Image (cartoon, rainbow, N blue to C red; front, side, top):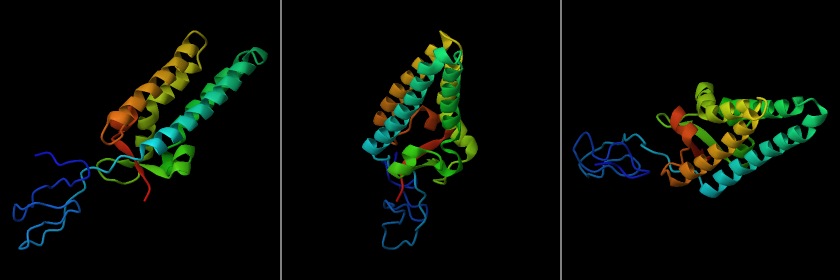
Length: 186
């Protein structure tokens, strides 16, 4: 029997075989078991998550547009710098418990490891954002490859929105790769 979202990994008491409640306590009146492990955290509020991530992506798009607009006057270096800044932001935003993530700070969300519910490691943060880091790095290349990199960023954003919306835990591609989940702070 698979536990429902938000229930505990132990749906049967290991001591008496009785049913375990949502908070991990055996419901049998003759048992004293109180040690269920959380199976899943609830999905972060969808509007806040998509709104915050959308604003963050829009800000990166503005940086990219400024770089591209200045490119003819800077021998194309400003576009490379803009894409590099976006790649660096994606590489570092979730490190150290998301201190640099503007969307998570303003919408009061955080990223946790699925298996421990603890803040993610810097390695998990990097893996979580690796698809975007790669796409922004690809955008640093001369055209037509740079434009393909920008299209990749847009395509990944669309795919991630679909995954966040449809996944019961709200996990996007990077979350699945890194074993992470975004949750609301309590």
